[in-house]
Image (cartoon, rainbow, N blue to C red):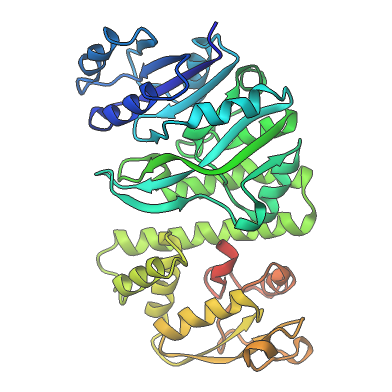
Length: 404
């Protein structure tokens, strides 16, 4: 009996399917089942796949008569699996040749591990490399991380990071079949998987980039607003259950800022009557400096540049690295903004030559300042501003480093 089934999920992407399927076929670990699940394609996918069936007995092709999603889709896929381990990969991603050979022993030799995963390289529609270390972590974490039960949930609540690409994951089949979950919306529908799985077992994550993850216009993960709204709804109850109150508040505020920022982005890009001053300039600089690659961040700068045309004085709460980044981008792009000073409980601003305004001497004036709350420790001032009637994303914003 084979140990692992690789499910290749496809729907009307015959033009990408060749790369994904051949990467699975070429795996150095050969003893695998390959299940190509055609989710109702009408672009000639079936004829394309049949060319492979006669040449590789490991491949099973299943075509669903209609396109299904969410829980019915996953239940259907898992009903076809009888191996101890399973992967669910996608027709637009490409596996490293040694992925299974390297990942499988980690989960095979520890019954408490329910998934092993890895990072990715980012490619475009034409297989050109965009980013070599997409979704990786800081070197101080080492080459691998193991999360005990509940530990990944707490890590996510504190760091707010996804450390892997879903197509890289080897699951323990019994664990995946055992969890009860509800898919919300049409983006991030599997977000609850990982918290549910971490409630019952350990995760092992490799720093290696074992997937070429393709970025293109019609992928679900490009629909940012729905993604952020779903993540907020799905994950907040878990964080409230397992994380401390400070991390929960930071997650809640950060997600609300993501959502408000993306709403601004959608408004800017969908309404031709809104002046998009400096958009390309801001976008290019954010990419080049590796500060941000998300339209929500870019839109925040465009929003401020368009909203405030007269001279505006602003202050920054927090004088560390995030305060530096925030001031750098305001000074570079918002030339009518004038730096008033910095509020910082820990006096870090002295290191950077900032003028520190003692908290006890600072008075909030909605007509004079734009408030940039840039540190996790800024949760108190966020709460204070909201209690005074100021709206996050409108009257004050979080700094860029909050989102890294």
